[in-house]
Length: 317
Image 1 (cartoon, rainbow, N blue to C red):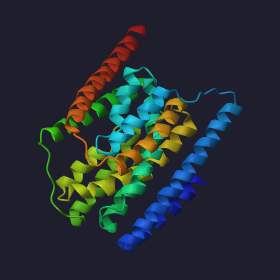
Image 2 (image 1 turned 90 degrees about the horizontal axis):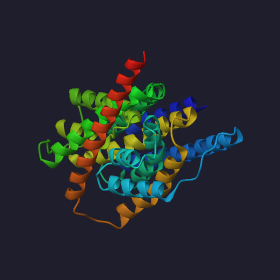
Image 3 (image 1 turned 180 degrees about the vertical axis):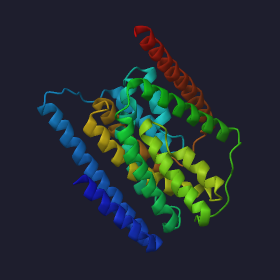
Image 4 (image 1 turned 90 degrees about the vertical axis):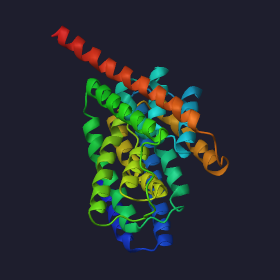
């Protein structure tokens, strides 16, 4: 049933490439709203099935709701949510390392869809660019979830550490002004179209591992000569499409922490609405520097934990 649903969604999105901007926006809003309803239904059904099967889970604590509110608030303003959430989870010892990728994807799905529902209509990116990039990101996430869900804790720590290190370097280069500012194009053609579509597939593939798509996507479209504003509908639309896909895989495999994911979702959605409709501008540079520093530290601790685990396993054998 799930595969049939996503095939229908992909077919509708591809056919929407011929629509005008207003019709396209309406179609995307309908698609994302449907995905949100489907996601909530599957998540609720799975949590109920866990209780029936005797698998205990608890409702979120205030700290878990607060993490969702803080990270999704700043995510809406362009900071990103995956790296800060990972930092909170690790520093507070809230989520086991092997469950962090799934918890990030499941918990932030509804907040991301909310962002897309609000912001997808702001910039008129050409449908022939926007829709294929959204679809390939979803396809990458589908494949990535199957891979990440079967990885042992050592490989997850190693992969997350490397991903966070890369994310911190990207954020640092952005703060130092070392990344391209981009031009003003709202469409990709020729070889640039292929680079953008394939690149977004790779970014979708990495999302289940815990590396956010926003910053790498903005850099990619800027390098391809697009306006940085064009990244917003692309990255928000991509994540709104791919995160329910990857999250449903984590939910079915039970490779996430329900309390933390529920807390992030409960705190995140109102925070997105607050950031989008009330807060117009904030002095975020200091916050970005703090995030970069914390993410660097967390990345090093993850890589160090992976190294110690591998060394202990060698000693044991």
